Length: 199
Image (cartoon, rainbow, N blue to C red; front, side, top):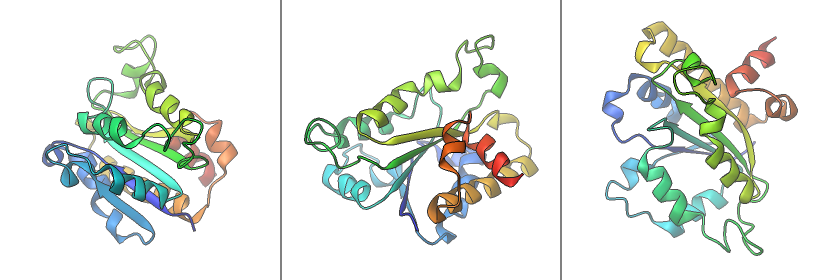
C-alpha cells in the first residue's frame, strides 16, 4: 500500500462547488493524508521542516488546486519556493523526493475546448502546467499526466457527483497500487487513464 499525501490549495473554497465536493469524502479513505495548505498557512508562513517531513513520509504526492491565471493559487508557489530547497529536493545532494510520484489534479472554470491551440487560451493545459512538470523532474519525481476537471462553472450536480466518485477511485488506485503506470504515463490525462482501466 502506497502512502499518499494529498496537498490541497484553494483560497476561496466556500465559493467552489466542485473542489468542495471532490475533497468532501477524502477523509473516509484510509491511508490518505489530507493536507489543506490554506487552512494550515492562512498567513503564508510555511513551516518548511514540517512540510519536508510530510513529503518524505509519503510515496505519492497529489497536488490538487484550481487553475488561477494559468497557474496555481499563490500559496502553492510560496510553498514550492520555500519547501523544495536546493540540497534537499534537488541538486547533487538533494535526493529526498527522488523516485516519488506526483499526480496533479486541476480544476478549470473554462471548458476543455478552451485549452486547445485553436481555443480561447491558445495553449493546451499540459503547456500551462509545464512548470510543475519540470519542477517534479528536477526533483527526480515521476510526473503523471494530470487529472483534470474542466468547465466547473457549468457542471450539473450529477456531473459533479460523478467526478467526486471518480476522484475517490483515483485516490484508492494510487493508494492500493491498482493501476498500470505505463498506460497512465502514455495517456493524455488521469481521466483518460481511468476510463481505459475500466474497459
